Amino acid sequence: MVVDRPLLECRSLTKEFGRGGALSAILSGEAGRNIVRAVDDVSFAVGQGEVLGLVGGSGSGKSTLANMIVQLERPTKGDIVLNGRPTHSLGRSERRKLRRDVQMVFQDPNGSLNPRYTIRSTLEEPLIIHSMGSAKQRARRVEEALEEAELRPASRYIDRYPHELSGGQRQRVAIARAIVLQPRLLVADEPVSMLDVSVRAGILELLRKLVKNYRMAMVFITHDLSLLGQVCDRVAVLHLGKLVEIGSAFDVVTNPQATYTRQLLAAVPVLKRR
Amino acid sequence: MAFLEVADLSVEYAGRPPAVAVQNVSFELEKGQSLGLVGESGCGKSTLSMALLGLLPNQARVIAGSIEINGEQHVGMGAERARRKRWVEVAYVPQNASTSLSPVNTLFEQFRHTWLAHRGKSDRQLREIAGQLFRAVELDEEWLDAYPHQLSGGMRQRAIIALSLLFNPGLLIADEPTTGLDVIVQRQVIDVLKRLQAQGEMSLVFVSHDIAVVSELCRKLAVMYAGQIVEFGPTADVMDDPVHPYTISLKQAFPDIGRPDKITVSIPGRMPLPGEVPRGCSFAPRCPFRTDRCIAERPRLRPVKDGRLTACHYSEEAAAMTRTIESGKAWIAMGMLD
Image 1 (spheres, chains in turn blue, yellow):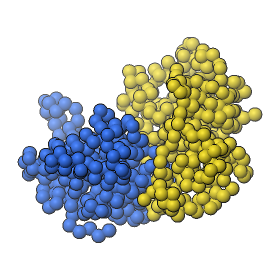
Image 2 (image 1 turned 60 degrees about the vertical axis):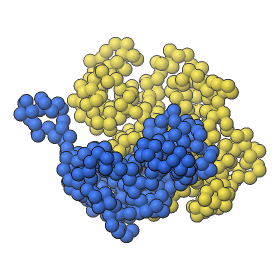
Image 3 (image 1 turned 90 degrees about the vertical axis):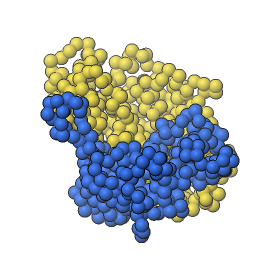
């Protein structure tokens, strides 16, 4: 995969969380000692049309990193550069615009879709929030997004509620909602781990196709290493907040360099053969 | 005689019309052996394991068949007798250790409560027994005095396994015990279960959607679909050359860490819910090889080769079906994929 101009750059990103009451820490003179560094000096870049996998065990910092990329957390140190623009200096309204360009697909569509919204309202809401188009244009865009997420024909799904759809279809709705604003970057946090194995491949293929066809970029977070080869161009391995290895997905899976990557790979259950 | 014998078991959920969640399921499990139950959500694997434990919810009931454990019939057994047997003879490891342990009691207190529920009086040796069990699952004995929230997810899951072994049960039913754990923690849990299995005393029914985990742990494999067992056999044989089109498709849908370039393919459509299972083969609506016969006539589970059972009319042609599915073209011909 040729990486042209990076769409997303993380430069020496660090996120620290204070543990326990901050005031009591200051009073007892322990301020600064009870700090957890969830993400520690992490740098990488993702190009247009590229999928970067983020792997690591629980507590490795993958979700904190994702939250910083989608601007839900502010880095303690370092910077996130999107489309060549550093994000730390942005004002409120610019940050709002930037949110349009960065969308997230969550792990569990049962939790991330409002059960009382029809699919139409679910997809229209982001368009309304960002004051995009007339009612008619919005309606057209909602249908387009559903079809892009392979929920075809859109009319079959648009007036239903999430509980009327299967798990795989619900995750497709969540993906449609993420792309309805035509973002530049998708952050997908374990998007198939709650789904049945028989439908996972289709969702992964869809995400990959969307990234390629629309020249987006994707950060794909997973703890399931067996998915990496199918979805990702490159893979970054996190351990205790630090980036321990980054390379092409095939190389990382077949020829891991870091000890931690080797441990992760050795722990993956394998299909036994005779 | 096998330690666990399930014959023609059917379980129904009340409703209008009632929904059959487990239909005519039969299998045997020898003492010390392990059986993996795999299938998608809603296939009936959890209902089946709840039936084995005698813990079906109120709206569900066994409508036919029998469950014999260690020579004793468990279907129709009175509630009090079933309670006394549960955990002593048949123990359970649930998926979610965090919500299965009491947050307001230390782990040792939970050992003590379990002990009292079955033995009636405390025992000075309990501390020692609990300590041994903790060591068996590689937990330091001092964690017995901790509260569940003080443990990590993997430690909690191992603590539950230790608790399930309290009365040295003949049968352990583990329902997705590693789902949601990260790979390294999952590995610890698998290794603990493997070691317990190696001692050869306890039979294990391991319920999972992850065929790789099952293939590491279980000698035998039952693939469930829409309430029925559709394929059964030694795990490695079934995984090497599955004979039911559902198993073949499931294998193709499953990523393989040893083959990062493998093309995985989803199975189009979805499993019928209880209550909407078609008259013929339940997999026929999604099956790229279905014929008129499949739609008209439900295939019975039948022997196909050594120790292998299948519920497909055409399993003799499995090699050709496998080639078509592996080519990735199976569903395109049917117009089910674009």
